[in-house]
Image (cartoon, rainbow over all chains, first blue to last red):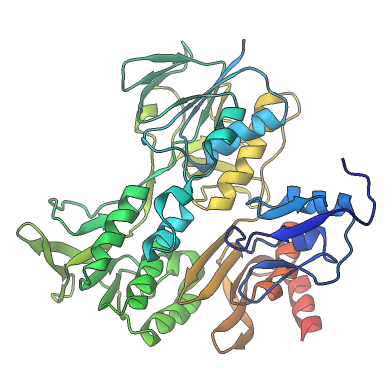
Length: 70
Length: 396
């Protein structure tokens, strides 16, 4: 599934689920950031690898990171 | 076939089951819960459920398909009555006996009630989904609200009642709200926050009784004063649900006493979540943590240690809790103990760091999630106070 290429992967944060735990930002600082309300968001224009996305999604304590392939 | 019995079907119990399956456990699992509902999430109870933005079904932790995929036997609406560790049997309230090879205690805590108080309508604790719905429905009738206890639950209920424009009195025995979790200085910040938002904050006095015939009418205070109220929400802490372990030989001391691997005093018995008091190897003491994230993280460790008894993992996390009040996101990483240094303050936004001598203990962020992150990292590697200060200096 995860082949590390830089395309064919969608990632989004479910803002209702996110608790601002921040693990995704620690795992993938180039992909996620927190806003001042403590909610994570995907940095606009970020080009994540599938591995990074998977690792960040796995790190989320509330499973708020949605990953999809296009 | 190996049989794991998990008693307690809230976050800690459910996450332990999930972690067991994720780690390849193929034996039988029975999950026992004393509530009729499917496992649900508690943080939204004092937030989205109370405000009415979420209907109760939305708090379900997993849908039917996800639960089915776990291939477990779910025993809902039945309490565990007793435990016989010699026979490795749990006795349930319906008379059935469950034999286990490994047992996980995940029974959580019970909300503490006002001592010696006869039942009156309009008086609630907030622990279960039924509690939250009952309080939500009473709030809709626009009562005068008295909140007993200025912890996270009490302050969140106060904020929601004020959002609805109700008269709110917050009664706290300590000198300030949130004193136990945040200390007096930061607690005073929250006293100010609630006062600015129209709450009548009365600290340093406790409740001596509730008056009323059927419904509560007023709260009597230790200084002789009274507070007129149609709705009283009691949030004065919670006690571990360990009654059913009496006589089992399992050591209990404000929770199930566990070693640093979350193992109870009897072999093949583990504890997870609010009910567990385990030895935190970094803090060097037994602690019990009633936080959502703790139940979830501890579940992973318990599942691993249950499946790999010869290679157990220590459990020594940085505690983390969050709260929503007046549209502000409050976050605490680590422990709010010792001396406090405020390193950022701008309007309601705030970041404060706690330390004892050169030990960096914790951080409090109010609407400052981004600023909190580097300190969470420092806490997770047990960095010194000097390092925390250096980080603060470089961030300015």
